[in-house]
Image (cartoon, rainbow, N blue to C red; front, side, top):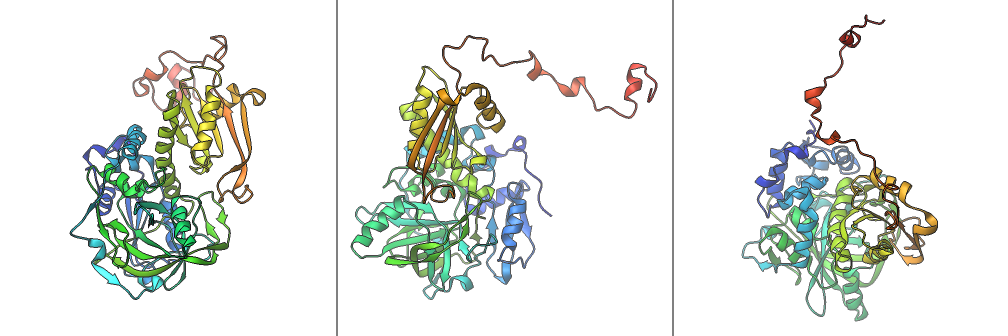
Length: 478
């Protein structure tokens, strides 16, 4: 049976050791009734995704013998902000600060003597027969690796980059890859100019802290595995791939080794993406797989496109790095939040301790420049809870005037996965929903009932029964 939701009041974050492994994390989810075991035989085509989506946010899923495959599939490992806090060993209010600290103070990884991820090596590759790769959404063009950490290496400096990309299985040893204009693409463009392939590794099944670290927004040539080390509080054990120079987490479940092919493009897509739409079919980059290595009894992690794990895994690390980015220029910034309604990418709420007029508009401009995905920014005062969308909407409704408080920027780079853009080019907008500095004190004074928060409802009230009228001496149904 599906497990019940785990209350934040029951958090066992303090008991969870820092540096938890993937298998240790599954143990923790099981012990706190947040791991559902799915009976053998779930179809890899749509079946895994259907069940994982139904359980998403309540429990992780462990699929036994999916599609008759001996390797189990896991999903929904990080589908709640509270869970991410537990994986870090901190309270939810400390998640952004902890991630920001790790991003600013990375820790070098360390070569390992023992590499469980290389216990079994396949030089003859057939992806669909060797790995249980699901098909998620109705119009997806086929099976996709969705939780694979794509690790690339700067061809000049040797510094690595870690990111997650959708990878379509397009042949026994071939993957189609959507590379957006970030660091992996920059590395590849450098090797392609010399007609050379780029060495890559795709890591499937790693610990939750390394998963989160892969989504950090940091300058190019900052290795996200070093951020993972900092989150773990110790150097992350890594090992050199069997067929190339990439270093991968030694305790990973599965590693797919290969090369991004120079001057090669093939059809890829459509694929159900985080905006809840399909990424279109187009000519994409190609990875040729040279080897697969894995543990003796590995697990295959999949992230269902558009699900909570997909949204939050990208959203919360981005919040932390966006908070650090803004605070460098604006010390008045107190908190940031990438709203679920904006698919944890496009809508940013910023809370500031406003000190001067015009400051909120500068914050808007800084936020829009922090990452091309940011499309709409709302800046509010410290009395507004930016994690409550109703509060943010209230601030816009009562403190914003379009002729005075709107920032509009046309023809700017946005997300290529936003279907409303023109191949990623569109407009961005900011809302200054802060109280004007010169406003009279009572004009924007929020109403409040004294003592409301301190009322002990259990001590003063009870649910009414059928005889409620008799409580004050009235005849029943009188």
